[in-house]
Image (cartoon, rainbow, N blue to C red; front, side):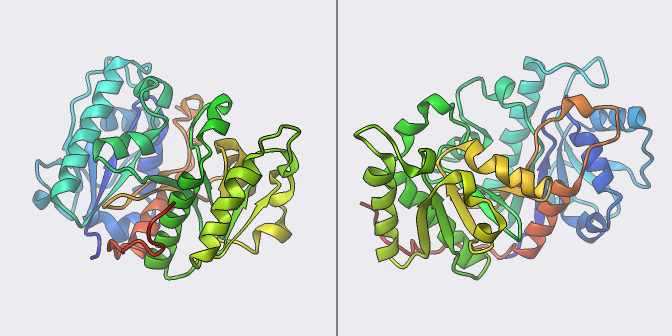
Length: 336
């Protein structure tokens, strides 16, 4: 089933995403996929940002109410009102309501249009999620009642996934569980086999320095190694646990497709050091394809015309390249 529409939720108004989006409109990738792109957000906000950034577009924004109304000659947008007095206003409850309305509409459209993919612009988790969700991955999964969501930071060279996503570090050890490791690896393996047509080589990191601890209870021995052994018995190419401090040396990472870490910065810090903007954020375990640029709102770069559109362009390329979507059976069976 090939994706024929790509919804782009414009995200946080107080961000560089308008600039990123406008730069994308000048790329070759946009000309290839123009007929598929439908924006969800404020037309007036985009137009104000255009003026302040002094960017001239060769086409107009066209407001539509339904996906079927999309016109290939213009940039189609389903308008969501955003009442802002300034061109770049401060993050507020007003912007949170706007983002909620954008997501609600996007998710309702996807429920009724299976051949649709979703991209969302960056969002301030602190202000928008208000401690109710760990991240946008969990927010979307809750909205559509998905229980097996996995955050995968991906490029063609390597992918990483944090077991505990955006959880504060003091809570991490309590959330490392055998069942969660197994479920996440199952979703990753399904994605690689059915989306990328390959059986992934997976590395898993330990939690403790050098995978050792002076405590009687060792997460590596009690949780991580039993999970690895279970997965190996069920035909998963997985190795570990490896100490995180030396794993991301080139001689190590070239052996694997995916690295599973125990917490966010354990894998995201070295990954972004190596690849910078060359990555996208994919949510696995959903009934549709959802990706997002792998960067934040970057409000400090507003007005400076330094925002990099490469991650958004990578999102579009990924959707176009791997948009044959089907829901496979669990390749490993039940977990224990």
